[in-house]
Image 1 (cartoon, one colour):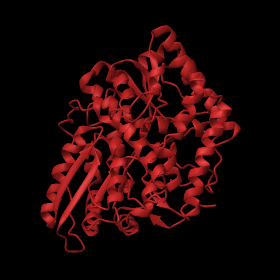
Image 2 (image 1 turned 45 degrees about the vertical axis):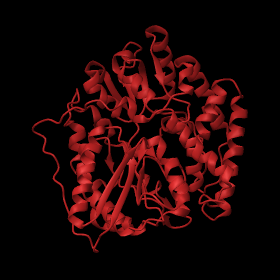
Image 3 (image 1 turned 180 degrees about the vertical axis):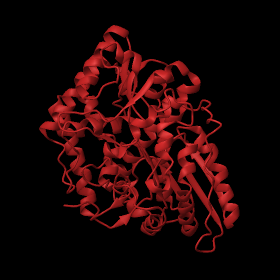
Image 4 (image 1 turned 90 degrees about the vertical axis):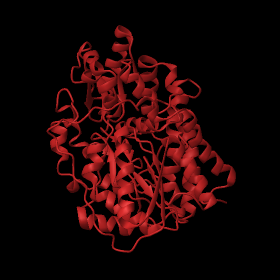
Length: 468
């Protein structure tokens, strides 16, 4: 057995799934163009520094993803180096493709050596047995900056063990990105507001304008998030609030039937082999009418294709028969592996990073939202009048109430280790894809997913990490 509590064969399957996502290229490949510069009259947030509560020394090795908005990394690297110099810690930072991080993390944990601090863009709950409890960091951050958002807490805290397996100081909403001119021609100038609108309008746009939609059913993170949004909006879910597996329901079958129709009428087979950059690249190139994603593709289009950027608008979660919800697009799970020799420095840096959330949000071009809303009072003003040249300036105002329609991937329960493993083995996008391709009926595809999910839940439940 390894640190997951899985057989070696199962461990390699989980890690291999993550590596497969990496092999497909990564989210950043289509997004590393020059980014828009801020308006001259918008002040850059000032950095703040608080002396650590303990003497620090030694090395701090950080592993994190290459940000979808490159300006964020250009800010982060000198920011952390400056902190290291002030506190007497030698800091090294490694940025890699986001799709490679889960397998890299698993390998380091199994070897019990590597980075002291690792950041990923989705829950890392499956690593709970092998990481430091960061409850003290959360408590100190709330003492300094106010209450943490519940969507973030549920993505980093296991109520069954009372452990913060990760610390999540920031997150990103997941709006729909649509081409306004295309949707105007089908009578929906404000874009789709329901899944039925998406089907009707998307089908007409493909038929009359030759442009498809961009919702993946592939082994990558955007497909994972889109599949959950559709599932919840139809009244289905992987688990209930008590962490009982409830995936096999009429509501889930209805969601799979809908996705099958959506694929046949609005998309093409390439959605089954997409990587996480594909829908972004298609939108920037003017070849997508709608994608479910963050704002990063639009930011890239501002410099690569300004006419397309001006034509892109955003909508909230689409309403289905039962609800209107999407998963958070990104959830910054920072973990400290148990093998780390410098836990104190890792924790102190996380608090320093949190104190500078205004800079985090600003330098990510408003991609990163704070998990502690009181810490960035400027955010609503920036969304009303984008500092980076949105046309119109209030294009991002739709995101101001995003906590009302974004939820954690375990909804309506927590993002447990079982939910984390379901995410990284891509069971949900595979469920949709098998039905859409006609390999299984919707009922058969849901039943297969249920069998796989039950096996995962039984393993983690036997270890006391999942309720029931």
